[in-house]
Image 1 (cartoon, rainbow, N blue to C red):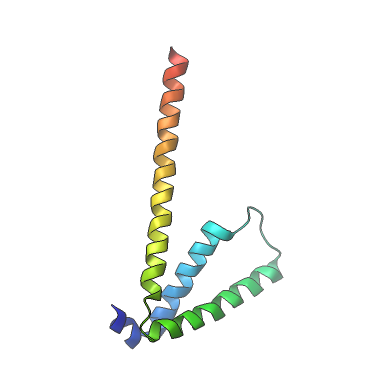
Image 2 (spheres, one colour; image 1 turned 45 degrees about the vertical axis):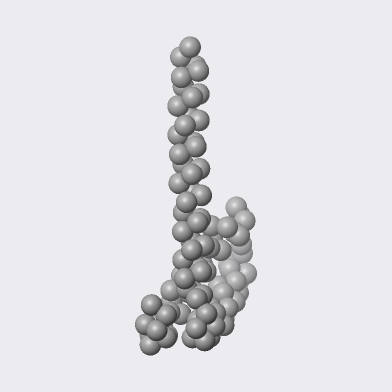
Length: 98
């Protein structure tokens, strides 16, 4: 996988940028939206940071794999919250019926 991304740097850059954007939007974004200019500056800086991470990826560091692990862990947490929410609703409805 590492060598394939080294042969296709544009695909690697896009994957890194998409993963970074997902992590930012799910973890670091405040509940309110930023003004448009700040939002544009933020995404430009994320694009520059993705370029730096692409250089590290090209130098044989597992950047994409680490981002995939981070996204996978975030999805596990979402599934856990979903299951806990369903269990809590089930216990609330069963306690109301008593």
